[in-house]
Length: 499
Image 1: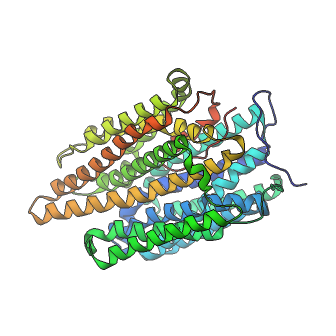
Image 2: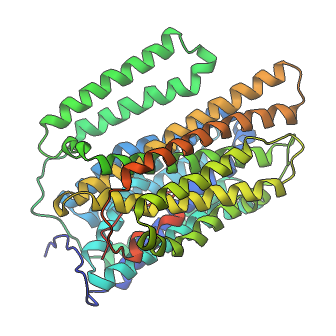
Image 3: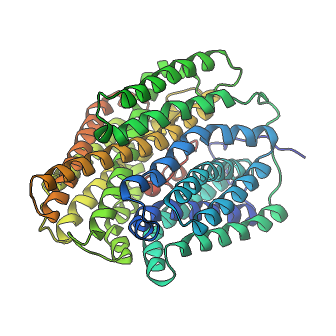
């Protein structure tokens, strides 16, 4: 019998998640997050093996987030209409196929195409996996399940760079994708045998495919212009044409969303000042952490700077993950004591300080100089993620929580894609300019990183100023499930209702 989504009540033990549901959803989100966080560490090895420049391979990161932004809401809607288990299995199948495609690719184009497919599969696995958890649990049982799911996300995000770096030395960069494909394949029989199908019979069967396509049509040319603007010329016909296509697509998207029965983005909610402020905070925090992880993963491995092995570079990014995880248990207590807005402002202040410190990077810096900025930035954004997610959903009525959560999750993907493209462009352009002026390789690379980190510091500072928009979010008790995935905010998080 089909089940409807059930919201947890304010108290009671509720229903605990069946073991098969926990295994399928938690293992799959662990693998997706590990895969996502590992890719930046793998890029130098992929570049050397395929002969593709790192500037081009940046699309293996931005393409993933671009596609994820376009399909994250649609995949959840497809699950509600056609069956969450069915669509979840489709996501697993697509993920396995993308891993095989990437592992077998001998060109950068194949890797980038595979990563784009992974963007769709990862968004589907996360959206439908979370729905499967929610529909099979209630009350305290739901909080426990979501907290475990968030822990699996954090473990995957932390382990990805380490495992990926280790496998590069042992099996080549392809090893990560073969292993991920095998683990995802093992989730299929578990899902088929132990996970019940569920739908939402009250939801409209209308799916906003036009909105999905138009989101991609807005993001793709805009990101292409950001990535290639320095090469093509910011006032060139190609760049201006890309921005024009993005603008026209944006207008078309708004027109479509006003007319469809079940819109991808409920434009009515965009009048909510608190929701907009929280969503901007989510976009900025996801963009800053993803942009920084991309930059330092490459900087640490460059022979002219720290010359770390892939595994050593994975270890070197660990302070950021530790900072995120360490601050997570403190967030609910801080919110109860200070309220949401001040906590978000404090988080962005710490992130701004971390990025500002990195803006002073010099070519002769050793690894120890990076530790404090990484911890400051990651811990700060850990303070932002959970409260901003809570503000985005607590600012709307119960009937609009799902739509608000969809907007927030889309913002995470957009932030990751846009900021990675922007900092990659700044890093490469400034580095090339200093090289042309005769600077040594290490100093030129440090100049590029410094300028990119200055951009991230400005973005974090903007988040600190705008966080005042969330201060009016009403104070509420938020269960630990709302913060369980905060430590994995540089990969994926999914907002749930507080209990």
